Image (cartoon, rainbow, N blue to C red):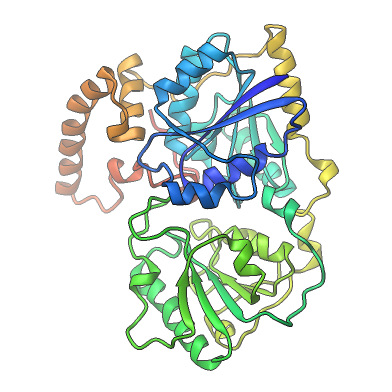
Length: 431
């Protein structure tokens, strides 16, 4: 019996990690899940929702050091790092350097990961396996990695929630809702987000027999993978119709009641496609990597908020499906590749993978990167020392940049823990 430890942090990574690992055969793999303590760690209620339907009743919290100690003590064959970008880099670095013999390291990106993003590759360069979810994603990431002189072992998996969706023909009878899947950072500006709310209000007024649901991923104060500056619940005007509601809970339950689904770019659109719920992907704000909606080009789902008000939901173009998340299950190879890597580990032949971050500073730089990723949850002496030196220098650098009239983002905002793989596309490598 092989052993695997899954390491998760924010709500989306918990849901993805738990669902994917639930597909490992229980007679071959013993799997545990832990939530690494970080600024993005899921709350108890988020964990409950994210773990629903998986094989895991809980994912207890643990510090990074406790996870390293557990791996060294219990001798896991593999570790699955299902965490946000900066945390992934820190976890993978610690496991690579401090766990002997090193377990197989598997990682990846949840949900829609097209177009390929350099930061996701950079931060996870030392992992043995990198999980993606469509032939298109594999192709795009291979091309990006090759263009940067990087070598990753990309493996294919079906988005876990798709394997549980009943693809029966859509029946409108008994359905009473239009569901909008909110995202914390897309679109970003308050004006764009207010436009969406105003159009949802208009939709509710135009269709009084339907519930118009703003489906949120977190309650007030709960942490998410991406920072939400302008929560939709706070933008709903007084006097909005009573059939406009803000609700949380599992997306599957909302889709079961939906006559139509709408989003800007949420992965929930893939779930809606699988459930054959007529859908709409808003293009009012453009189609771009920053909006994470380029993947829907050619799907037939792109439309405007005016289409939303008119209930202009539609089905997906069949030619788009197979290259984008709906490939045959026989194409998936992540489990076979994981077993092959574990066999290499048994023989002592697991290849070393170099980090892409070629930074000066050695252990002190690693302590700084770890402190930046974990903030107050990194309680190491090295982290405290690095913070005492690094944060004042960072403040001075940002001040000098502002005095020079720089209009670009500061390093501190660019590297913030909430600015993860889904929101950054192919920046230049930084030391």
